[in-house]
Every structure is written in C-alpha cells, then in structure tokens.
Image (cartoon, one colour):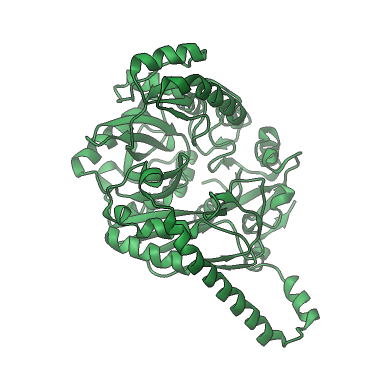
Length: 506
C-alpha cells in the first residue's frame, strides 16, 4: 500500500480523504494557500505544504506546483477530490509523466467523458440511450436556430466542456434563442476556457438519477446503485438520496447495466458516476459522466456499506475490487443535505464571515462531513459549501425524520446558511411523498414558506446569542477576565489539539 499521498484539494473533501487514508495506515500531505492556513484539513493532515499564487483559487489549480510538492514531500500518489483539477485530463497525464499515481481514471477517460459532445458520440456508439440533440458543437447562433426549429421547443443549450449548470440555457421560444446562445457561449468560455456549445431536446421536469460505478485495473466493473439528485436550484444539486423512490428492481438493474457499459466504453478505472434523466414514462437518457468522486457519495456508502474513498485508493495501488456485483445489496435509505453559506431569505446570496458558534447534530444514523469549525473564516474565494449532513434509517421515513431533527439541531452562528430552506423542503408534502422532479424548487416549492419561517428562525438565533452571552458572563463575571479570554482565544482549535502531535509544517 502507499506510504504517503497528497490531497490536491481543500475543505470537507480533503478531510474526508485524509480520514480514509488514515484508516488504511497511509500518511497524508495537505496543500494550502494562505487563505486556508487555519482550516481544519491543514491541521488534520500529517504534513502541510504552502502553495503560492496570485489568487487563493489559483493555488489549487497550479498543476506543476502541486506535482513538485508531491515529489518534495515524498508522496507516491495524488488524490484530487472533486472540483479544481479532478477532471483535468492534463493533470492526470502530468501525474503519470512524473511517476506519481493519480487516484482516479486515465487521461483518455477524463478527456472523452469531460467533453459533452464527444461523450454523447461515444455513448451512442456503445448503445447507451441519449437525449436527442447535436453530436458536435454548434458554430454560430444561426445554425443553433436552424437546428432548434427542426427539433421543436423547448431546447437546452449546454457547454460542451463543463457542467454544474454553467453555460446552460433553457429556450422555450425561437425569439430568445440567439441571445441565449451568445450568453451561454460567454459563460462557458469564462467558466471552462472553452466556449463550445451544443444543443439537445429539453426533457421537461425529469428525475435526475445517477448510477455509481467503480472499476479496477483488472477489468472488474461493479455498479453500486442509484442516487436521486432531483432537488436542484439553478442546476446545482441541493439534496440527494438513495435509493430513488421511483426505481424498481428491474429498472435499477437495467440502468446499472447501461452505466457499466458506458464506463467500459471509455475504459474507465476507479470511481465514477453516470448521470441520467428519467422522464415521466421511465425512459432514461444519458446526461453526462462525472469522472471523479461525487459530492453526494456518502448516501451510497450509507446504503451499501462500501467506503468509496478507501476503494479509490486501493484501486490506484493496483488492488482488485474487494467485492463483486452479487455482493452488493442496498439496505435502508439515506439522504444528504448540502450546507451552504447562503441567505435563503435574500435569493440565496452567498454569505461570508467568521463562524462564531458551531454546534453539529449527532446521534444514531447521523453523519457530518465538514470542513469548518468554530472560528473558521468563510471568504468569497471558494464555493460556499461548508459541510454535508447525511442521515440514514431503516426506511425513507426514518431517514427523513432524522434529517428533520438534525437540521433543527444544527447551529451555525456568524453567517447565514440555507438550513431553514433545507428544513422547509424536507417538511414539504410533495417531497415527503417522493414524487418530485427537477422542477420542484422552481414549480412546486412555495417560497412564502420561508417568509413564515424567518421570524421563527431569527428567534432561535437570538436565543443562541443570549445563551452564549450568559455562558460568558457565568464563566468570567460581568466585567469579564480579559487576560483569561485572550488566553482562551490563543488556544489551539480542537483540530490542532487532536492532531498537533502528528503535524509537521513545511
């Protein structure tokens, strides 16, 4: 097994990978920009190396600096996490050229599946059902208009080189197609450095179902079932769960086999996800492949008891999968809520600031994957996701009830989060029934509910502030003991206290 690996990422996913590596007896190396020097993952790793860049985000995108750091630190492999360099074929190739194992797929698989038009072409050849649309990028707005008129509206303009809703536009009328095409190109170019756009028929309000696949270097492929990711806002996933409420055993088997065929078509190795759109008649169509570990992987881990992060590392080392398809079963139900630093009462505007108080929920069937602690500074430089809250139970009702209670007990003071919104969704009768689709937030959710919740939420926050103040008064007296308070503030965080003995700065 590897003796030491470098994690080319930050935040909660870095903590997640470090934890998996520790359980395998592997030393870990963190990399950080100055903006992250006090982040939990930096203190959790065995070693930490500083990256320099004009911007914080740029530090984590500097391939050569990260590879040089891996060599300097004696790391044998690099785990990219998700985001940043995780889906850059050039990074996978650079690791390979440098004699460092990339914990992920080969460059070809990343490249072909990362380009939406190439991926659609490959999937069509492999017999994987795809949404009707263009196989190549569209050169100009006039051609887009011609194709859309022939296909019929609504249509979807999409960036060929990326995902996450960037460079994506729904078009319901030919009069708006040209302007939306130009807007999509600008956004795609800015987000991915490639402004190529393709067009496909828009499947209205489908289910977003993805299949987790995993493969080793010895030709073994297994799927781990589905995740329902239909609760989305601006094409970004917010709540995910497994299993889906609409798939039966036969459909799960069929989609699983198609996902494996898709992975085989590009020679895929390691963990990846095939995403599908499922229409109201239960026809499914290939959407894209994410050639990395997904944000929502914990719900699959909860129902299959497979540690995906550990399997990734073992596969990269050359080991055979520790299970076969017939070994996989799905027990119970799991749900994940993404905890974002966004203001749900102000059009989900991202919020920044310092977390002055943090109380995470716990108990049976509750898991927190977090990258923050009390005192963490949330800045404008990175994605506003703070943590992921996962609950599981014997059935969906139990998992939902545990999620509702966990959200009620989740306390973050110092900045706004979407917890009130998540709680409102979890309580919503349509969501509870399980027959929702990707149009739920846009077409079904009543945002007036948030207005009604605001007074209740602000009352809770005020109560926390009063309780915190009272605790300080009881501890230090009405005037406060300044010296003692200063000493407390200078104490290492709980992460530092737990792991300082293991840490060496470089």
